[in-house]
Length: 239
Image (tube, rainbow, N blue to C red; front, top):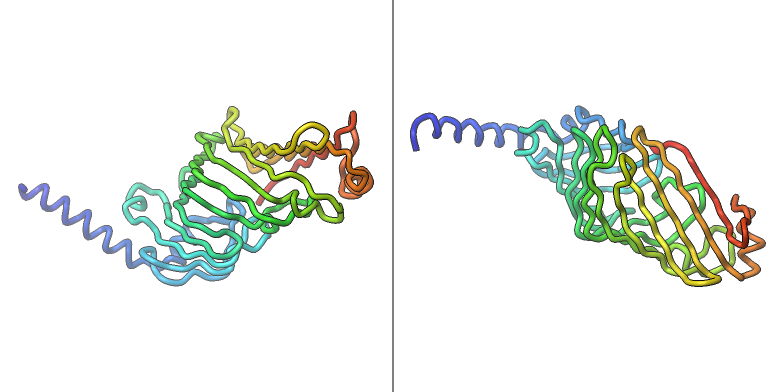
């Protein structure tokens, strides 16, 4: 190894060691996660290993998350973390801010009550093989497998047990689209969530059911009947 290569290696190692001693709260503050609707009460530890307590997204609590920043990504001007959640989100993966949002996770379980939905849902959303990239231009890459038991537990005041739902995520132009379906024939459900650039969203629900409890209760939570199918469309901004 010549002197120039040795000096470059020493500088890189020194930079990584120096970065790894920086307080986690200082780096998170500079990253401004509130720009995407994420807030937290307190960050402890360093970028090498720390904990973020009282995490909330879009006004909903997600509990505490253990994080480990990836110092080499900081050298590229990106804030990437390895995370491990045990609250509203359970599972581990990698996420990033800086030049957009990134998520890579083999398996996550999310409590639906923590999501910013006006239709009250309980249960869990299971996400596997997630690989998402969203930048300033919108959806850059999106793959994921999704499943949920939300309707098995009913919808708010509706005394009805619906089917399990499954589906995935994809990019449609600049939009991130998450689609879930379940059931067959007279008892079928379709849910489509579209996230647009600028944090706008559109959620579409379509429920076909012969259950009288559904016909009586769904209008109470905003659904309208169209050709035997109960539909609800919600639009707004997250974060």
